[in-house]
Amino acid sequence: MDTIERLLAAMGERLELSVRRIDGDFDPDHLADSMAQTMTERLERSLAWNRFAGRLTGVASSDQR
Image (cartoon, rainbow, N blue to C red; front, top):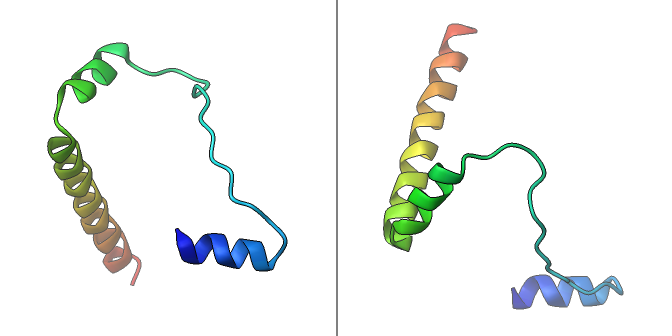
């Protein structure tokens, strides 16, 4: 973060973070389930989905050759 803030300052900019509610449909039960998990559990699930998506991309790439 320090590096990003220094780069932005060199460009005359400042990093500002904010949050806002996501517009669209979401499943409140899924959200509640996710929030009931520990940060480690959520991270492990996210990494598993990332690995799965990488495998799918690899399969799609090999099919296009």
